[in-house]
Length: 212
Ligand SMILES: N[C@@H](CCC(=O)N[C@@H](CS)C(=O)NCC(=O)O)C(=O)O
Image 1: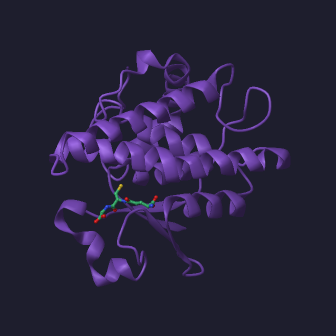
Image 2: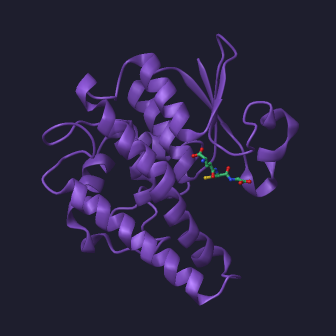
């Protein structure tokens, strides 16, 4: 049994989607970020960086923080969603791209769009240019492919599950997915998966999965 500590954000949904895809027993615990529950001593003992998501394996007591690390840890433990052995390099490439490029770039736009801009116009212009770059790179990668990692047309892996929840916030970062047709096709393909639908609504329902 895995305890999942999460909230209704893209980083949290990466893990609920993976757990739903794996079909293993887990219990989701909502950590209300607006109430500061991520900074309580009890939660910091599980996630020392004070951020969701985090997990704890109830059988061993092993806790893991950082969404990319948790995804890799679970996928390796279960031996699933990493593609064939020869696909591992590209799975890691796109998982790390998500963590270091896509998440931070789109997160900065969300800050400006939703919570105001104390840094001035140049910072916002730069953030939006980086966001557009992220979409251009993903669109180029998905041309002629079904999934981001793996040989040929690709194979469904944790890299897709990490990237998709951030794309599902396209309205927040004011990106028109019609401008990125390969991303749009891939986004819709994943959105049709029952596990993605279920994982999106953990720890509770906020809105239907956005469908462009
Ligand atoms: N690098 C971390 C980022 C996690 C993260 O930024 N979590 C946000 C929600 S999406 C959070 O917990 N924010 C609360 C805070 O910073 O106080 C990961 O990928 O797990």
